[in-house]
Amino acid sequence: MTSILVARDAPPLLLHTLRLADTALVLGHRLSEWTGQAPMLEEELALANVALDLIGQARSLYAYAAELEGKGRTEDDLAYLRDAPEYRNLLIAEQPNGDFARTVLRQLLVSAFMLPYWHALTASRDETLAAVAAKAEKEVAYHLRHAGEWVIRLGDGTDESRSRMEDALDELWPFTGEMFETDESDRALIAGGFAPDPAALRPEWDATVARVFAEATLPVPQAGTWMQSGGRRGVHGEHLGHMLATMQHLPRAYPGAAW
Amino acid sequence: MTEAAMPLWEVFIRARAGLSHRHAGSVHAPDAAMALLAARDTYTRRGEGLSIWVVPSAAIAASDPADKDSLFEPTASKAYRHPTFYEVPDEVGHM
Image (cartoon, each protein chain N blue to C red):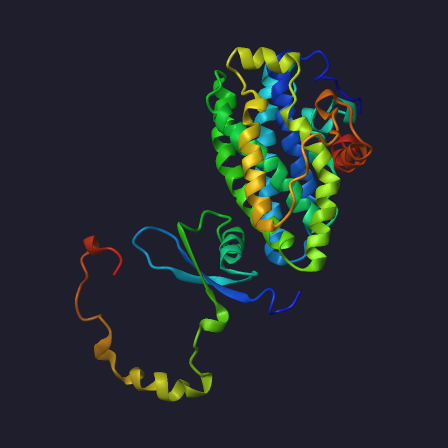
């Protein structure tokens, strides 16, 4: 089935909605990969719950993006018929799950940003985004609590759990800078009161991460670490294409399949 | 995963204001804070709860099944203890 192009040359509000939707879907799909493989039943359910929250957020946002685009497409078209370079998610969302330590640290780093982001977005001049944000804010508050509690226990745990958490930190930290980036499209929305300025949320993110890391006895990496960038422009690492191949296989092989 | 690192917790859920907490099941968790999260994720996925209690399973003292005759049999012949001899008005609700 032919791939579709939506993000390229998209007006600011559509691009912004797609970026939020893509990050939510990609991270949600990553978490769903734990289903059947989590280290314990309780965490299997916990990760699946978080995945379902994120996929629910993505659905609302894709439905709105399809409406904004105005070409009669559906949320499923946007999720299943776009190739990796069309995806505009943050790179941290597409990073492989690795072990449980890396998965919960990734969730902490993203949730610590998304909580103040959704909170600020509830004041958006766009009523639909504000409504999605109000629902998502409550969900992400729990994601942050759950991930934070695990990072604390694994960081300040056994030699094995701490070493895994340190490896996860080395792996994921370079992907945190992208959350605070803005481009011309973002700045138009920020100036118009449609979206918050992510740079203004940095102190809250820093404080959350510092609080959790202090309890976890993990060092906060020094400022000035070289940061990865590109996901928000459609420039992805090698992993996203593989993930989408799995995620999109069924609707592409059997267009319009329903059950 | 050892039992010492991940002990068992009994989970009690209160479904609505005015009802009491009821036993829902059990979860493994490293401590009480994590047991509350695990209980939320395991037993309140369909809107079942307003409040959760978790209790270390090891802290529960249980009656011995072998004692069931001496503990429970004597009540079988005391029908007058059942509140079936008067009408409860509907407005009373849960008792």
